[in-house]
Picture 1 (cartoon, one colour):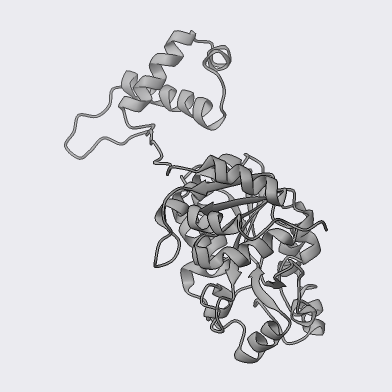
Picture 2: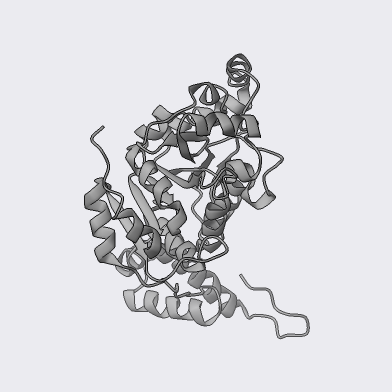
Length: 335
């Protein structure tokens, strides 16, 4: 209930009761998604009074209605990509890519798509990187305490704070009013033996056990375009050192998903690196029913195509320049 401002006339008892009832009706209608008839029956009032109370709630500022500015799309290219790669959903933002990274229109479109995919009791896994940070910042706020957000990969002190997996998971949980499950571990450890030991730690084990319950995973796609890996947050942040990167390139790696490098055919490479990763496993990723990737730009197109070829990604949000290039690269091979 609103508090009277200093010097203002205090709310009368009837006004206070009206505000309280309007607040209750608004929560049932917007949060619980009950119909006006159901609310009327539950509260013992008429459907017409429910409608008046909803309007009163809006007038008094208890409810704020926002219209999302959803960027224009190219449905024809989206359908072509769905058919070519056999994925469940593709959404293509029309227009040009942004020269300095992810286009604001792509981030807004991806946020709109992801917001519509999230149910009230989903377990959402989130990876990391600049693309996902931009998307999370565009997500509309809601309050869904039944949602759980799980950090899919360990942290690194070398990653910019807003792109760090732990910070990104917390930011997403805050936007959704959800519960956050952090992974208190580095992205890579020294040996598989150390990894196994850390996985037995109670706090880490509690988060890792949720990996098999993830119903929606939101990931970016890293690209090793050029030897500096300019389109991979994993390489940009030097989570992988020069020796690791040289070894990956020698094995044919052209990009990464979460922490896992893959080659142009969609085959995951660098098994020894994967054995040291504190993250959801490749097998667990493949079992998640909805994995949505967000990536754009013509330079990333070869890595996007290869990521689709892994068979892990079921949904893609991209931009027109990347989509045009993707349609020139061929489809996903049978796996």
